[in-house]
Amino acid sequence: MESIKNYFNRLLKKFLVQLKRLKGTPYEIAAGFACGVAISFTPFIGFHLILAAITAWVIRANVVSSAIGTLIGNPWTFPFIWIAVLSTGRFLLGDAVTTDPVNFISIFESASKALLTLNFKNFGRDVWPIVFPMLIGCVPYYIISWILSYKIIKVMLDRMAARRAKRQAALKENIK
Image (cartoon, rainbow, N blue to C red):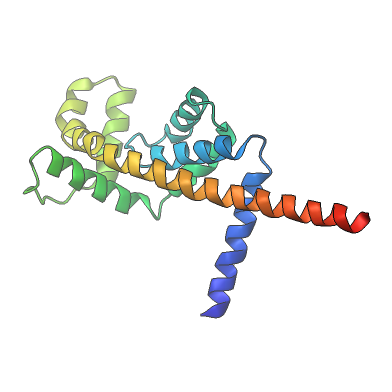
């Protein structure tokens, strides 16, 4: 058990060091990362990188760290995100009693076909009844995930900067 904990601690340190090496202030890096994390909760699969970069650019955050943040949405996490977002959207729309299982792969295939062929009738019939609740349901997750990921990364980057400054001050003191 201890070795697993050490592994994840080392992994987290490497991750934070890589974020710290990005150009920008701790605010810019943390805000960019938060943009990527938050965008991962939207149903715009295939556009997460672009949307995260635009969002980061708009709030003057680090665009590269926004791309890193989108890695929160991946094949292992998306099914859980989609179910949570869809359930929340249905609840917010007053349709919480719907428990029909959703085949997300077929929904996204239908969406792709409808958009590529510009067949908006099929999009409205097959895709919109699922995507609309997801759009509504992603809003609370977007806000909460942005705030949490921003605060966590910002605090960690600030602590790293403080330790670095302390080490540099100690080195200067030893040189004298």
